[in-house]
Image (cartoon, rainbow, N blue to C red; front, side):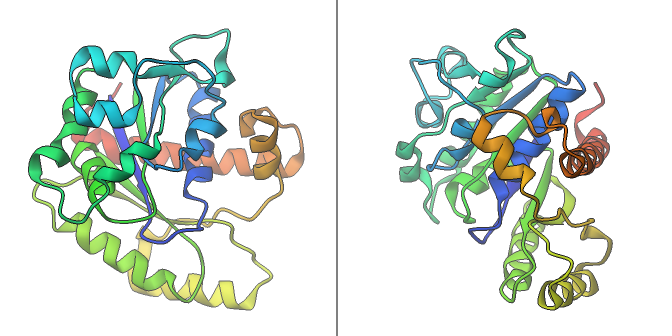
Length: 260
């Protein structure tokens, strides 16, 4: 199983929207996927239309990463009612915020990795992290083969991206960095164009093609359906970008996890 951590040191960049776009791309190509919602706000759980009641959630899994706890926390996404196992979710929980501290010990940070070893019957795991670099995000890094950094094109983006990359690279045998994706990008904004070029000047080829700000994203989320099922031209164009982003994730990850 290839494991990707999607993270940001800055809130409000649409990180969970990127997670949902990648999940939609994986579903469209039939890649069996597990989304682990580490964000205490649990927006990915809501966006993936999880309605099934399970005995445990992600907070319970982190507290006790045993096989029966992990397996009992997996719920199907409402996107795949007729295809069980194709897209599953470990539901988010407000209780997980207790573990999002800057001083989490090593045993706490390893809990997610231990749990995921017991949930290896998917091709891909996507870890949605909170907008911080504390315990929950660090536990995701330790469990991941690759990291995708989500940013926006704002004045404060450079410092947030720089801090994230430094922290990931400081890990011994850490995950590969897939890249930095600028989300909700508006081409007509001179300020955003300037900030995007600033990011590229500092981080080079790590900065990927930006994801534009499109109404199809809130439309798909509001309807509780994958982006790839929308038929508008802008939705199809954005879906194709998520397809390419997923390709990059899988290519970057295969060097550490092996192909499937």
